[in-house]
Length: 580
Ligand code: SAH
Image (tube, rainbow, N blue to C red; front, top):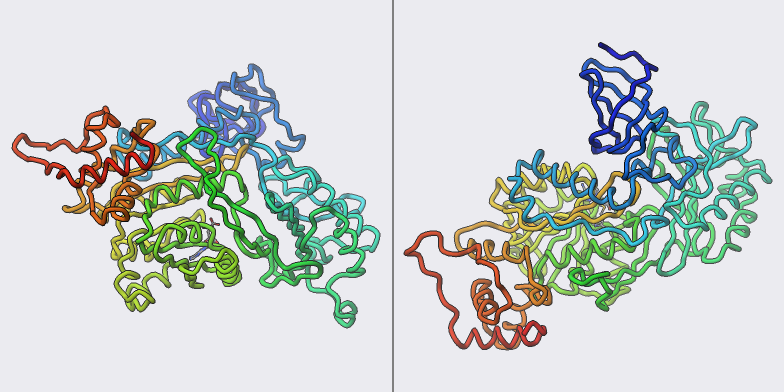
């Protein structure tokens, strides 16, 4: 039987798609049902019938799933931005963990057992509401021609008025109201896509959560001749800036001109019309091995301009960066590349524990922010390059003239990548493989492209060693993941195998990583010790109870034993870190 548009079907939702639709089967058909969650029995209306499957939306929930909750936002269905709002938060986290796991297996081709062993549990949010520090509201008109701001209804360009998105701070409602009142009182028109007429297109708000600073940027079409002659961008510009300036925390008001008829929100240029051109925010590194992840003391201040990328969930970002830093395993002697570095956030945390960091970022203004951020935080060992990672990296690989001489730059110890959703360009991945760093830390906002790229890196001589999802985007289907890939080669084989051991760490072991112990021994005693030796001493001290994955495979192969002077040095390190 084939379904027609608008048919009503009763269906039990058994699973959920990556996009957050409920999946169920009815009459031999697979149905993708919007706004249904796993476990629901629903009556669904067919919206788009296809040959063997159909899209539908919930008409009525007949028996709610035990995982269903009442969505908090009144416009969550038409808006569609929070695909998982009807699912309880614990189930949202399981959904995301599964999504990453499945992508690594299905797209990455990794063995399911390996993924189960290395994939650590998702880092959830303490409060999955009001976490976003950035909002972009489209501006339009209601039926009476009055300006409104809100969100595009999913898949359309009609605006659903909404002053209070529950993912952002409450103050945003007051900011929107201030801009709309200014528009009404001064007859400033909203831009109309159909005709290309009108002026105000979008309102961008950024909140520095730690600093309390607020930035507002109005995206507008070019001002008319009369305004231009007056040297203004908006009519009664001072009325707008004066009203916004009364909002506590307001630090920066700017305007971006965008005359293009595309989906890109921001124009190329931004002009500050009141206050400072950027806002600041503080990020602290956290101790991810401890419950509640307390800050460890290291904190950096960042300057953020309207055109620069900045992570949208500051609290979870601290956890994400802390994991990336842990995975990088730095001791202070490494040369590191940080590709897709934005305003240098990850780079500058890495710089605190590395010898030298090179950042690459495509947006020139973000590179300027990165340089300013290095200066502001007193960091002198980070350099930034503007350009595409897939062009800058090969260029330095081929030429390799750096402050430290070509070799360190061409063969860094660690490469960190944090690309946009489409993942890394193949030219970038190929150069990474030629550079052969010991470790690659891949920070990803799309586990499908992460899996694709990790597969390629593993085919090129790396091994997937650790991975952990971090929920940066509660209520939505999106999830961030950090991955550690280690170089496989004959000499390093033992090391890699042992690092696998770190997967199920005992409480004592979590206090310091192998890299930290190695670093301490080198610093204090001037001795190099291997992972193998550290593991042997740990086992002697009763810190590791489990079996060593790295046990010799054949009976006659023998592992070297840790000499006594090195054992003494390792014991001193274990004591220093409070492990014994
Ligand atoms: N690591 C940063 C930014 C991550 S977002 C942070 O955590 O804040 C991805 C960044 O990659 C954005 O700043 C974007 O401008 C940049 N980007 C996109 N394509 C790029 C490319 N081909 N080469 C270099 N940078 C790129």
